Image (spheres, rainbow, N blue to C red):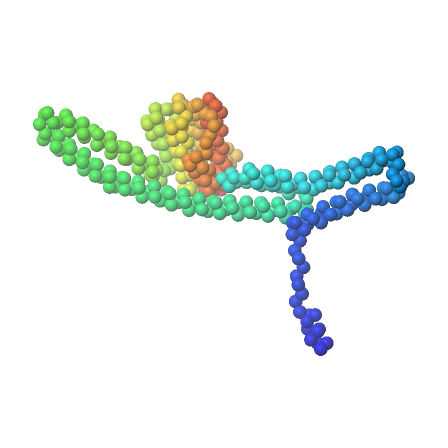
Length: 338
């Protein structure tokens, strides 16, 4: 019987309960209140002040002052202890997964450190999951863009070319009264073919793959000026670091979306596009002198933020009423992303 009891006593014991944030905060508040009331009791016991029964009128101010001091000390200690919760609540209200890096720093409050670290870890996990899902979605989008661009160029473009050649042969053999009309139709088809090619180039920037980022930005600016009539001043540093294909594609797409927004909404008369490298950081900046004003974060701007998040870049948009819009993409340590 004793051996059986010994075996039972040597068996696995229940693991002690983990110190949860709620239990730690309860212990902290309990200790603070206990210390305040203990100090108040000691002061009352060691001081020459006495309390009569019943309480005399002259003793009421002393009791009131003592109670006020105890309550004030308790309030100050609790306020300092719970201050990180206000900062945590403010972070919860402003957090945006498309604006990474917003974290709450540890304020030295040991009982809330675990809560703060857990919340920061949750944000890290959510941002990583959002980045991964955005990468898959954008990769699928780029693949679909390339497929549509190939179909436009290879199928519709070739069909329109065949129609154009047929119209030319028909116009050469047509009588004079129909030749002018056939030439008009021929020019319409040629214009449609040019538009199809432009759409295909916008969908798949072949110049980016063939000639590089600088040539792609130059072609993008020229196409924008030709369509919108707004001149673009370009400034690209000649000594840019070597970049990966993903980084170059993000730079190109953000510049493309920015110029598209200028053409649609800004009513600008001048646009500046610059790509500069300074202190290891690469900065893409697109500014205009349009009407500016409030920026509504639609699908275009959110798409720009998702692309910036993929390469760890910072995207900022500033717009003052009547002062134009400033779009800035900063890639820190760009040379390491090659």
